[in-house]
Image (cartoon, rainbow, N blue to C red):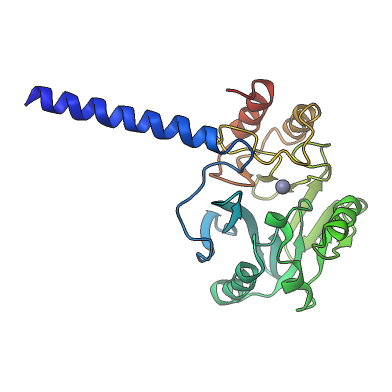
Length: 258
Ligand SMILES: [Zn+2]
């Protein structure tokens, strides 16, 4: 009996080790932790605070499906959306479920950089005359990549308000992409780090196509210096956590084979 149990313990441990090693090596350039969910899965909601939710969508990268985070912030005058869903159909679903779930209009959308997991659904908002804001650089890159044309106001207007809630955008420098910004919610001390910030479960830096791994560390340090009292940090992909996500991102940058 004892031998049988030990055999199974050994067998299971070996299996877990094997899966961990191999899944990590198979996704050197993807966002963290693929999921087995089909790409057409419904939007998922994760409540962080009474008035702040993560909208989680799903997209495909190098043949695997990954989750992606955006934010929905409720105010007394409507809703602020940070980043679209990863695909157009999921953004349509996102807009409809915001209306159904919260019974509020969407005031505006903020895009945190010009990649499809952040802005594939821009046209769904724009056809409803909902303003979509970005920096000049994001707007330029979005146009070049055929992702639509957001209003480039965020270099000048770094604080935006809707009703009783204001949000601040901050450009820390080139990291995951040349245009990546973070969004700070001063009332709730939530920091949306987007793809500049990796989840604790991420074992690599994800999609490095437009990244600058030399400057990325300084960019994360600028965010740490500016928002030392962040209570919640939301990465572009994976689980939300605290400021240790920023330190984990730096660790991955310093020793990429970590
Ligand atoms: Zn990206």
